[in-house]
Amino acid sequence: MRRNLWVWVFVATLIFGTVGRHLQAQDAPAAPAPAGAVAQPAGEASPPTETNTTLWGLIKQGGWTMFPLGVLSVAAIGLIIYGSMSTQSARMLSPDLVPQLQDEIQRLHVEPAKNICAGSPCLLTNTLHAGLERLSDGFLDTESMEKAMEEASVQEITAGMKPINYLSIIAQVAPMLGLLGTVSGMIKAFDKIGLGGMGKPELLAADIGEAMVTTATGLIIGIPTMFFYFYLKSRYMSNVSQLTRVLGNLSHHLVVATRRYERGEPLAPADPLPEAGE
Image 1: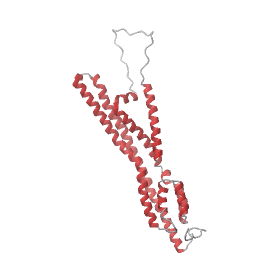
Image 2: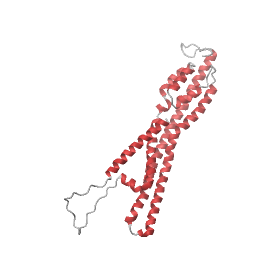
Image 3: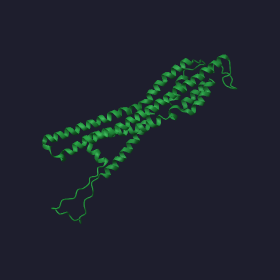
């Protein structure tokens, strides 16, 4: 799962770099006028020209703070893509394997059930496999199995929540970095005011623009990231609640099969009782 996480972060980095190069090409200076062009007389005022602000221009205006903010935006995109895929119910619970596991457990076929879990690792199978490991040498201790599944579920759930928790960190750090850029821009503006820049807005425009751009960028990154954090966390915890129900159902079938075995009853239709060492 961690390997897939870094793959998605790498893909998001490539996308971000490609878009940045495209925007930089759009922001390139215009070609010089041809040699035969008629020059405008010096006495006539030049007509006002429209300035088209591009994304790359805003990035340059934002200053050094835009670089860490760009890294955070790429990381957030990668984590969102990874979290959206890893929190799917089919990936976490593998519902198509539940009937097979239930059938093997009802027949007290521990090794086949363990093989199924080992062949399709996910949150459900990893937790169940830890419980089945406690059933060995024909000794069916259901209490020990439930205790092992409880311990394994805590570890698996904590590991699965780490990528989602990283989104929360990015959502809090990005606005703080934007605020740092704001402070940096305002310090530069006040320095120019102290050097006689009062009343000359053209001297202060770049620094004030840096202050505003970084604040807006930090919020633009932080707000969607926080939204996806709560959304993915809610979906993840919903799957965890389903995990508890599925494991409880499988544990119940194991208890019933164990009691039938102890009473000498058939475990399933046309299914012979297992031998003592089986």
